[in-house]
Length: 394
Image 1 (cartoon, rainbow, N blue to C red):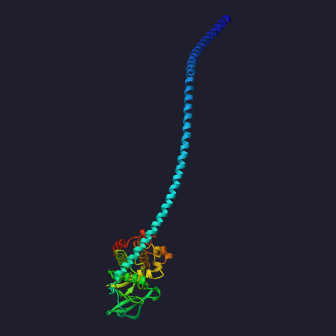
Image 2 (cartoon, helix red, strand yellow):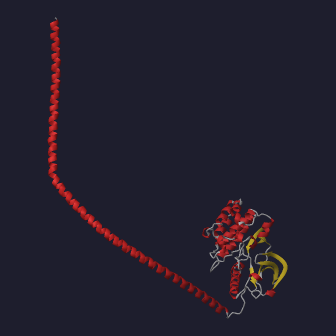
Image 3 (cartoon, rainbow, N blue to C red):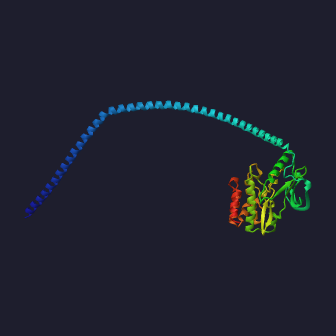
């Protein structure tokens, strides 16, 4: 019985050994297959390597050819660099010649400007001579000239300014206002007298309901007298007495704007007032409403030429008013200062300009005044545009 069990056990072990042997045999078969596959790959790689070795001489030839081409290109590049240096030197020489030509051209332009100035001076001299020749045959006085003995002055002073006083007088039976210029301020040389006569001639041709009527002036050796219509009051006096209503501000400022627009539209060239202030806006009453008229539109120009100081009140003056770059926009700036004064009842103060504008309650007036105060004169509105805005408020 034991022997049988041992025999069975040996048979089982034999079967197990046979199974393992079959597995080893299968593994050996697999390894042999892989080995054959590796040998095949090796033969292919060997063949490829052989082909590459055959191609190497050809590649070496191509490489030598490319090396030669590169060497040629480098030679051409060095040649081009030499040409570039030559061109750069030529360009530098041309720039030097151009700068010399520019300097010569600048010198020629300066000479041309000098010649043009000489021509302008000759034209002015010729024009002056022609005017003198045209004026010689005429001995009669211009229409605006008033004989001094026709004017009766009274002791009633209507006002005083920096360069003259205004008194009540009589002319041809009518009560008039007579402006007397301080003689010490006015040197009526031959040149200044021509300017004076020209400005009075312009003033005598100005006709507008919102301008103070210019009646005439004396033109003798004495201190000039300007005769105008007599008004009831001035804007300055009214502001010293009380504040203005928004309607009064709109109506009076519209009258001033219309007067300035008329002067600025004057042909052949505009008239710049240069002295807009509440003292130069005179008032008359229409029913129960104060209306305004602008005065001194003729005197301001002649005073600019004959006095040593610039006309106008500094607190109303535009930044460019004391330079030669003056246009009608200096009046627009002064109009803004006047409108601000009318709105708040205070004299303009350049140091408090922004503060005073901020005090204005009417937003339309406030916005308009800010535009009138623009530092760039070209950005300020025209008087014609201002009229359009004010007419909407009246």
